[in-house]
Length: 143
Image 1: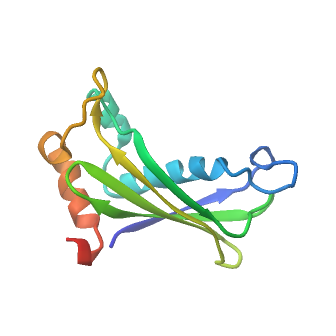
Image 2: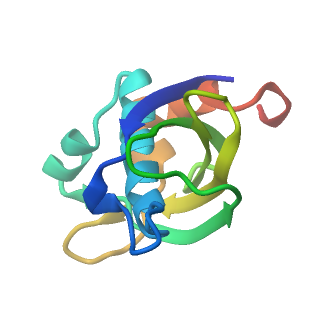
Image 3: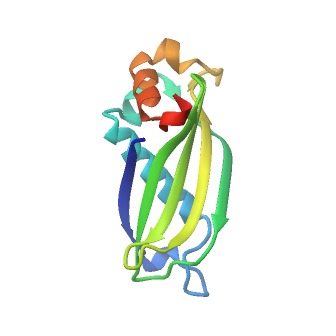
């Protein structure tokens, strides 16, 4: 299984009145992790968008465990949980860099669509390189 780890320093602007990371910012961090994971595969979202396609989110699942705070460093681990040629699900684990404790876990599911029509497309037909790289990134039991 291929994974990527992205380090994020918690900025003051990402915290709420309680001094902890505001819950929606974890979604931003997941996007950063997902983008870096895709780059690890040798691909770029930018190229997909330049070709006239988008990859909107269909579903988000997040479990909040222990909150991160300003001044701490987070590690966003990202991997491919599932892929069926049309839908792709990324998994995430956000940990404390200092202690390796898990702060947040989650997943996002996406589909690729034509930019003008928002009609879903099959990656295996339109983006064959993405399809092959996603297959190679799946956990061994899912191949």
